[in-house]
Figure (cartoon, rainbow, N blue to C red):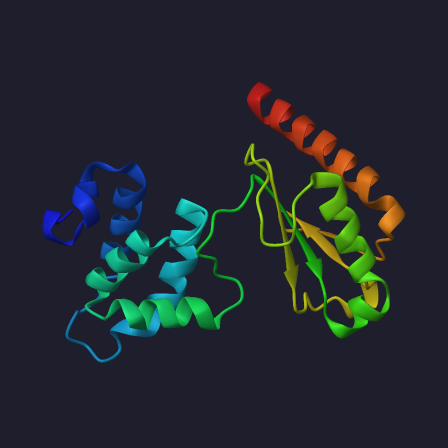
Length: 182
């Protein structure tokens, strides 16, 4: 990896190395007007690697693409999926789209906030949970919808929130144990 494009001397950081290898494999021509064609894919990959897109990662990507930091941050701010703040290990999202909202999503969100002691957009002190509200998940027939780490829960009622959290954690723990024993 080229040290002059590595932020803050981070060329030894495993995450930056992984991201750099990913971008290098794309064989981007820094002079090509089409170089930004793969930027969204790269931002998805970076968010997967880092968990979020802090400024130093944005600057690194901008340098690798030979574009301005404003170009990169503009894409990040345009798309709701990207985040510049850390998320918890267990990411809870409550859909607040019209169908979900009219079917009680606000009460569901309030219950998640009450049980976990954080507001939407925040992470618990131990980093285990974060809560977000989304505009639409595209599953209106299941309204209100909650996703936990990409798993979809439909027709959720506020009174089911504690059970959903507990069941999810039990299933995740079983999956981790099974994977470790495989």
